[in-house]
Length: 166
Image (cartoon, rainbow, N blue to C red):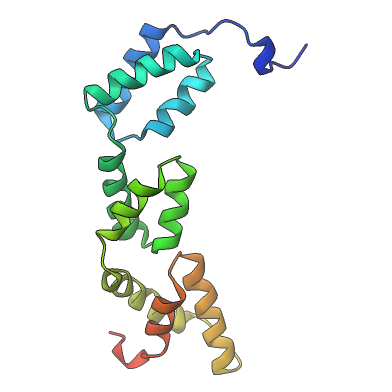
């Protein structure tokens, strides 16, 4: 059996009307970005013209709004996942959100809010991490915080002032 490639793509199993109905239902139930909708339509094998018409309908009827999605995504990842700016930025990039929209949503958040999230994370990690020296402890804490997407300035601010921990 031959693998399906873009040049020998078979007719779509999903019609344009079915795709529009599925996507409007999906967007009515939860917030989604345009990148996710385009990925779904690509997987369904819809043509570029049909995708453009569907996207125009979704945007015009405010089912899809990347700015609104981006603000909600940033707020949720900060509050529930306790991610830093860099990790949130990377996740939004992976969802094909443009740079201006990403930066606008992230710039609404003050650096102090990220530091407030990081302080208790560092304190908890310090209590459960074993290290032979203070240098080793600092490196482990820095790697941990960097993996969560915090900037080096935010990390230094939390590690250098341990008396501020709750």
